[in-house]
Length: 329
Image 1 (cartoon, rainbow, N blue to C red):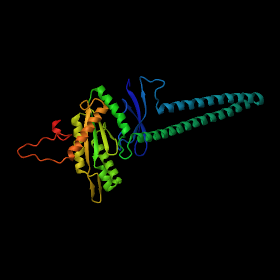
Image 2: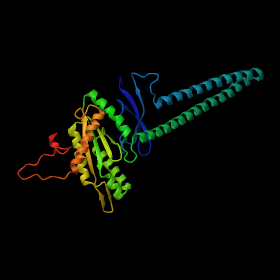
Image 3: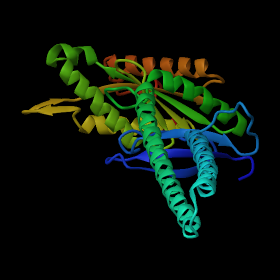
Image 4: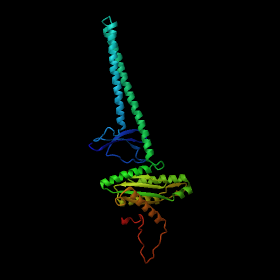
């Protein structure tokens, strides 16, 4: 495979049955709900492995199996030598009939064969137990990694994972000279929803918004919940038109679909969206976050202002605030 990275991932779907599949070229994004809980088992560079490089769990299993095999083979050799010595001693000191010279070695050989078969059975049992134990460790590690990287309520990525992945994606965009987009979203009036209907309804609204976001993004996009009512989406290989198109799709669905519905009560949700990107909206992560946050604030303020009707003799000015006029892009 040359210089490419060989990565092993473990896919665990509903029944928690796993299978190992080979993938190439580094890290891929984990998906929520549809991802069947994919996570990394290990990473190995085929052309540049060093003695102190990170090893995969399978490497550890192979080392443990080799250690068990060495112990088993050593026990077989020791048993064979001891058996030969014992047979020779018995034959030389106790055998006085011709048939004894045949029967004593055969009895010793049968006992030795039984010991060899038993040792093989013990070896297979130990290896099986070792693999089961390793699989349990991997499952626990996967659960811990998922908890560490995901928001519990929305199952989107959390703030820490977002900023780590942001730097990696930005570095790849600089190297490949491709564009990327950053979309920030903020729920308008979440405090009012919590005060009026309770925090349980507020949590349901947040979770349903996360599902709407997940519905409209691509597999390569990275959605995250940054805080209580703030979300973000990283979009690789995306220009400003693609980012604005996503914002428009989110607005259109939220205008039509309530985020909470129970016994005739419908809670509609408004969100403010700001976008920026590389290289058209910033050269580093801080600058991109600054411009996206400024754009989101301008969008929030513009929708709070009362709409003014222009005099009949004067044409209305185009909406030039935030993401209002998509034909300008």
